[in-house]
Figure 1 (cartoon, rainbow, N blue to C red):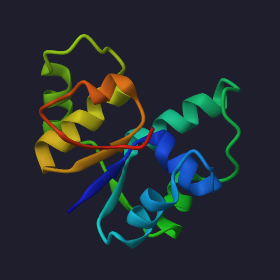
Figure 2 (figure 1 turned 90 degrees about the vertical axis):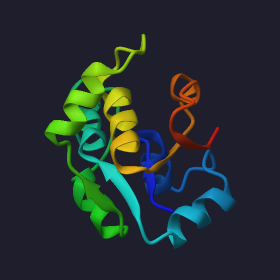
Figure 3 (figure 1 turned 60 degrees about the vertical axis):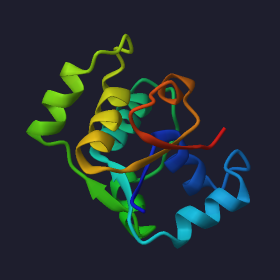
Length: 126
C-alpha cells in the first residue's frame, strides 16, 4: 500500500506529537512508500511566513531525511484538483485528493473535510 500523509500528519510525525497514535506512527515508519506532497512544503512555508507555524529548517529536507518520498504536483494533478466537484476551495486539500485519485494512494489525515471524500482510500488519524 502506498500512503500519502497530510501536512498535519507530517508535522505530528516530525515533532513526535502524541496526536499521532503509536500504531499509526509505526505504520508510517514501516511502510516503504510514504509520500509527502510538494503542496505540504508549500503550505508549511506559507504558514511559517504568516507566523501561524514554527518549523525550523527545510520541511522538504526533513521529509527526505525521515525516508519519505517527495510527490510533485504535475499537470494532471492540477487539472484533477481544479475539476473536482467539491465545495472545499482549499487548494492543498484539493491537490491531496487529486494525488490520491491519480496515483491510487491512501491518504492519512485528521481533516474532517477530507473524511467526506468517499472516492479515495483514507486512514483516519484523528
